[in-house]
Image (cartoon, rainbow, N blue to C red; front, top):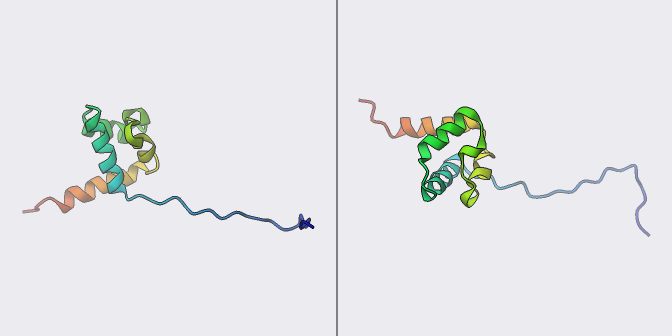
Length: 89
């Protein structure tokens, strides 16, 4: 006989989506843009400034990947990498 106790809330656990590091998202997007013949820097800047995902190609899932990351996180990662790789002399 099935449990008919409707007073209890049941919930279904799923594995959370695997979070991909922002750097990997940017690498994927950059490479997809290059493969399609776009200027990746211009297109990524357009996306960051406007929030319009059509700046990013859907090739290799790049558009859906970049939309999973907040735009301020993209700027933070880009700035972090710039500062990390810049000799401040």
